[in-house]
Image (cartoon, rainbow, N blue to C red; front, side, top):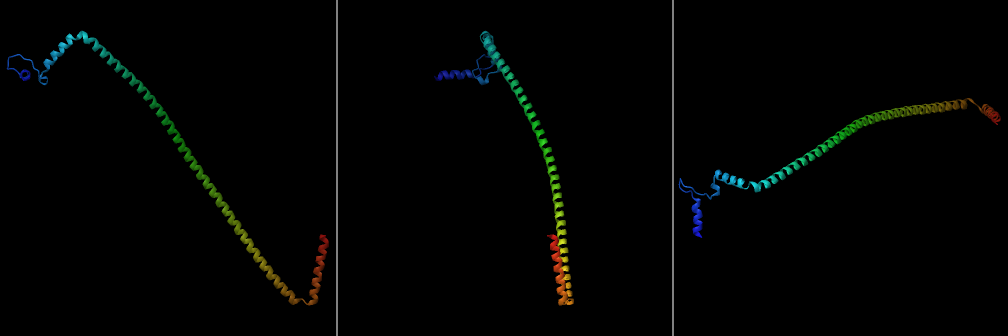
Length: 188
């Protein structure tokens, strides 16, 4: 076995210049040898592999065309979805603008409503204040009148008591009773 291995190893060495040999070292073979081998394979395998190669190329061409067709369909679907999304975005933006405008209008309306209601409340408070002041003035005037009347009455009673004697007093009472009796007859 060692002799067989040695014989292959000896084939692997380059023979001296000017001799012809077969190079078994695949890594060391030059491109010329490879091109010769491929040329022989193509020439002799032309009839056998031509149909196989043609079928392979046709299958590959069909797969590429199908992939392109599918890609075009997907592209068309993606463009359609993009347009739908853009349309929805425009619609949403318009609705957002409308909400914004309506919101600003509503805020302005509420602001003016608040200002008007505050103005009306202030007017009512001013009216209540004026009514309260008028009421308090009337009450003060009535208290002053009542007090003046009481003082005048006390003064008149004091004067009458000091000026009247018993007989004059009885005559005045009798006259007043007579007047009340006459008034009673008129009202009945």
